[in-house]
Length: 83
Image (cartoon, rainbow, N blue to C red; front, side, top):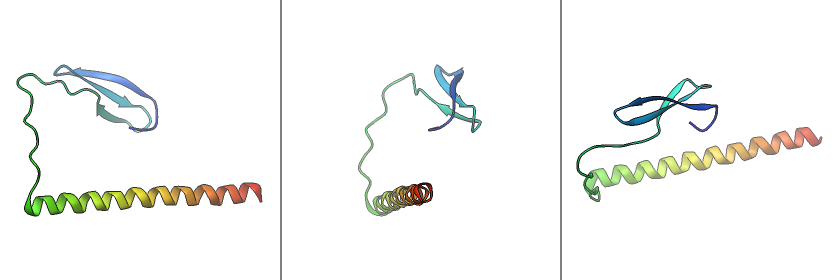
């Protein structure tokens, strides 16, 4: 939830949830758990490690592409604005 007006909307299981009024989406704002702390995540190996690395590369390229597209659009709009 990056845009829109957000208000805390609910309390469930000792956690607070926010409601994005423009996108009508709910986001968990806290993560309070009872009991022992979770164990540290072990480093992935084999096929899982390969898939996680590929996923990270793909998401990085998508992020870079969106940033480049956004900059290109801003440049086009600026050229239109200034003639």
